[in-house]
Length: 301
Image 1 (cartoon, rainbow, N blue to C red):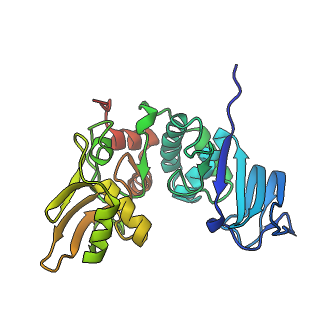
Image 2: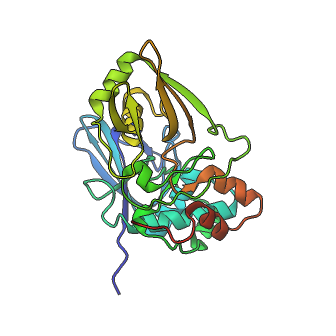
């Protein structure tokens, strides 16, 4: 039997503190400094997490500290479940997300970055340190998601407006099951505006043209531009809350400002974490939560 491949998670310098304390010892910030730690590795108060279990390697370069965490599949899924939902999220919501992360990991056997790693950010999944015992138990009890692993996605909130993978990326399933509106969801609806200068920057950053079935927006007389790529470009240029989600409508006013109205946080595809938490609190099992999120037999045509 083949051994399970380890998972590597990296933190770039911009996510690391200037002073790094590990196992009670302040590390030396000298060029080329490298050190490895094994077992349960403890960090100082400047880090966003306190412990990581496995193998941790740190090194210091021109831009500052970098950190790499080598762990196993189950530990990564549990840590990512805790990072995205929180340690105190309902048990069944954790089971549902762990099922999605398990399938997503199968689609990325060599990591999600050129160096064969996963990052600790939303591009892969947020990691805030080790998972607690309840989260590990939920991960161990996660159901098997009957879905092509390429399309196992989740988002922070759909805001009651689900989208299909085909609408967002121009490929994948065209099914978009109806999304529930969650009470007190802060991302249920939002409004944003971009100045003419910002609109010009977005036009310069994104090529017009859509893949079959992909949702796009016109920016004046130019376009259509894929909404997903506009959202990503806006996030990189103006901050990730500047264009919260893909489920939105847009209009240009007489002054050239782009005005948006939308729903959700993220790409609006797959498991909605806000919905999963709410449904779990209503007593629904992970199997039901997943069936609602992905529907029956998603098509890849």
